Image (cartoon, rainbow, N blue to C red):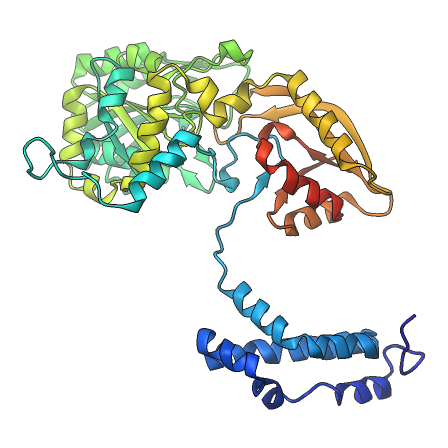
Length: 473
Ligand SMILES: *Cc1c(COP(=O)(O)O)cnc(C)c1O
């Protein structure tokens, strides 16, 4: 047992006596190890870190730190100052383990990339590239050529343009076709999509004026027809990707809208959000319209994200009629919203998986989406067995659901199994916080007082880290 100077751990006399053992800041700073830290981090940073650690030491003393513990920590101060300084400059963007079962989790960076996409990034990142060089002529080329050939493969007869994200694509297309004019949109589609991205706000920033038609639950094609006038620039359809109005509803079909637009010489744009290139039906999920279906309905431009169901990097993809896409490309705003070579590298690799028909095997989002419930159960059982003795932690397996998330296929719930963790003496909230404090952080969810770990969204190579995090509880 540790010896204490006084029986009451927080007695002021005891604290005072121990405070005197803490060396002065000057003394600590004169240690050789701190000199060398000052060369790396600067004298001021070293002084500040030392002060903070000394203040922490004194606080620990008042909270009952023993004499031996104090001596030990004073000896280890050099090490602690170095650790603190390195911690302060650590990258703030770090890998995390997503145990929530939400596949496209916006707060966790949406789609994890395929190995192919990661390899492509590292290959392109390391050196120079032909980003804007035409290798045949040796003259300046356009970066917009990249990825376009693959998108045209996937959508024959269509042209494509890639910008920073879907919000940028909406902004660009509306600015191109409706600046100073009206955009007609159904009231039922004026949605807010995560991170306070509100369709009406984007609409206005593009320089277009909003013209709402219909009611929240009902908008007929005649409603659009009625308000079309000389001021109209665009008919916009926004896919309700993160909510659904159910019950007494009616909306004009995309075909009707496209036909009306073409008749009246107006550009028809569909904001798709999720960007699923494949039908979800084979995964036993409710049917979500695919990009090909959107284009087949006759809209001029279809817009979708690169990092939702497509499973690639953050990007906003516009696919559509050649003339409409070309007009967008020539808008100077396209320059401000352009993407970087690393994004092209990852996007081309991702699209290639689709072109070659290997998407469900190679793209993590689609692999997670299609993993059968039985497979998740087996993995969970193996995982629990591999943990061995977990003390008072009670681990079990329970049936629950995973979700696609990220504003894609709202209703879709995928049957799964989760590992539940209960510690009779610790509230679930505390366990979740401890898991999040682990390195790498583990993000889990709570259901009815139990912490749930859904292995559907945990990569196999992350299982050892997850094991360490749970063992540390
Ligand atoms: C997610 C989503 C967006 C925004 O996409 P970003 O790529 O994040 O900009 C826009 N519209 C819809 C319908 C969406 O689901």
